[in-house]
Image 1 (cartoon, rainbow, N blue to C red):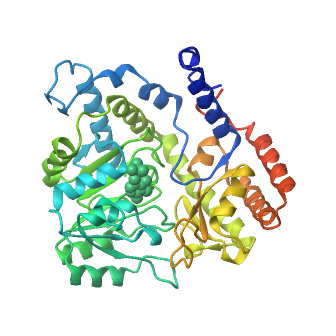
Image 2: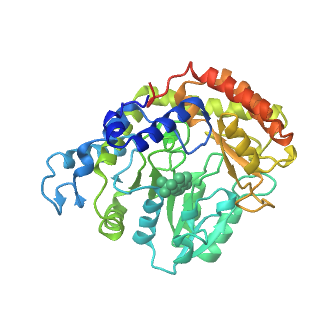
Image 3: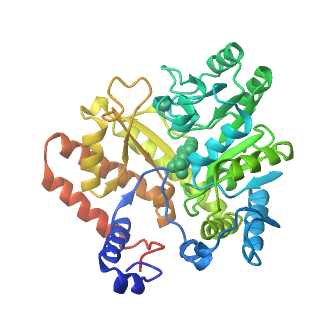
Length: 420
Ligand SMILES: *Cc1c(COP(=O)(O)O)cnc(C)c1O
């Protein structure tokens, strides 16, 4: 049953209640390997499901356009103070609705339409909002894109420098969605300084690792830091923009009134709770276990002959090129899902296939680590993945069903926040 229970949804809207229960069960029964997902605590779920959703609070604490902020103001102040403490930043804005609007607010703060932004190309591991052509950020701004080296699968900082000095972007984004290696913030900062650009570190994927001390922090290197709150940071869906004091005003003005209306106060409370959790010693252990699990899973996959972009991982994420297995990413991801292993198909750098039917899959360990799985389980997971992929190539549905059953069996021993 969903936790906290939802008896009122069940009586008012049984159709939706049944679907919510179904999703909760699905999350309980699967090895969830999508690296941008997690399981939030019941405390975060409760905070995000409160009457705070009833309140309008356009503006910022002590400067609102609506009355009745006696409780909302302290909630938002707590969220901001906790973000400042966890990440060690001068300024934090906790109002962005999600990662994409947070990044759009950065454009509004630092660029005029048509001016130049530089980011990592989407098929190389960047995010849509770093100037990819189909995104508003690529349509309304002039975008130049860097990638990774074909031989190493890692960001080519010489290319980044050359491109930055030639194109003179006003903003440079570092970070992305499919980067299995440590991001060199000091090197990016040096390049941005040389080029006269504002460096923005988008830490959406690795915020929890930074909070937990297993990835270097961009603070002191990037003047602006954007992040989602719902990936490794293990909060509700939302985002934050953090910055030096110098840019605080520009950031706040861009979020409101530049881009958004009223903040989602129930989400703000959930973010505050998640940041409180992230400040506890157990969260440091969590972040360390996420990375230890990813390294163990990568080693087990390498042992089974899998081709990993960049040859492994430093963080929570593994990008697998399935070409040697003779299967594309999409059919593999679908077979893995039937086998109880939830992944997403993904382009790999220099992918000869199309983005909607790419060569790779992307996996990660944030969710399974929250469930309590450790290094000792990783060889088993690699074996199950291998069995399911081989079964998919051979159209062997019974083997896929068998793996799904074995996974359900294992996971009964690992409780899930949100399911009782
Ligand atoms: C997930 C992600 C985003 C976007 O977040 P949404 O909440 O999905 O809009 C932005 N940048 C990076 C690097 C991400 O990984």
